[in-house]
Image 1: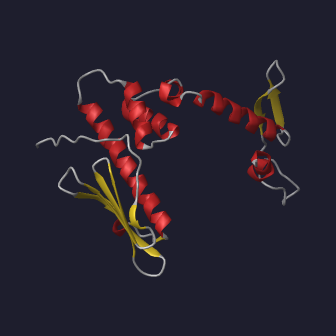
Image 2 (image 1 turned 60 degrees about the horizontal axis):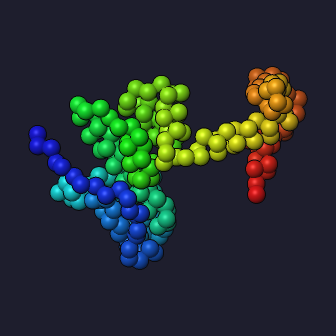
Image 3 (image 1 turned 90 degrees about the horizontal axis):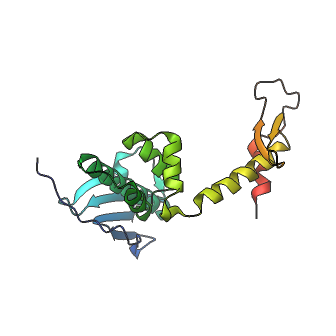
Length: 206
């Protein structure tokens, strides 16, 4: 089977043109994304690979759910487009016999719009990284500079907030919470007690 060489340009945003309330199109990285209002609030969407004979990648016709509103339709089309390019890039790298530049891969995935968590899962699933190694590879990547610090700050804030209601709390030597434990199986007389997430949700509001 002949391999199709595709020159993708990830370094551009997805820009929708046309009437966003009726029929709109976005051309991005060799793909074409379409979204069109059909009946009532129902929208149709589709993604094509223009570098592969306009092959249809996916569309709302393949789903049982109805996509209500143009924003939802465009979001789904963008999600499909990004995952398609991610999978294409990963497949291309796995076919090559050269050493893989994972820093370049992580950079390209970010340009495509793949989140740090999705990138970590890609390294684990497709390149057999251990979870810790995959996390460190992404967090230490120059394109995600500051991500580790942000993650640690959020984790600590989460632990500090949860410690107020936890059944068991452990601390570091500096006094910060290191772990929290909840007795999820114990009998609780207060049946109306809110869930853990509801108890701390307000603590993260600006």
